[in-house]
Length: 112
Ligand code: 5GP
Ligand code: ZN
Image (cartoon, rainbow, N blue to C red):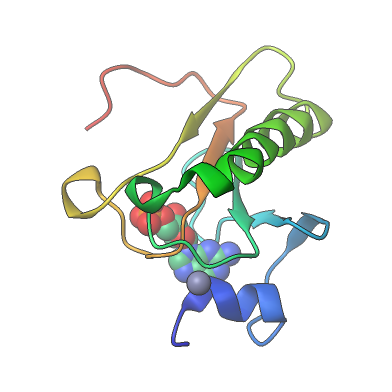
């Protein structure tokens, strides 16, 4: 399958991995938008959040759990932001579901 993040999961494309288990991989974003900016992805290829099925609900929770755990490990005890850009209007560019975790700077609202 021609999917960038599946290639990172398979190890065919290098990434600065922070964490990996049987369900998820977390790695630093190649173009960080904050001092802490990493992505948590499922090993399973899911195109976007709106393709999630009821069978994926454990996985979705595990992604969220991993995101906050690693955020704290990287020093974001005072807060951080998680984002899942979904489809074109949501600004998604890589069509393999991923949770952005951003921290270590003051983030503003609303986002662009
Ligand atoms: P999206 O725009 O789909 O929400 O997020 C995709 C993210 O993946 C972007 O923040 C982008 O910088 C990151 N990204 C794209 N290609 C690569 C890559 O090859 N390696 C890593 N580590 N991040 C990537
Ligand atoms: Zn994929």
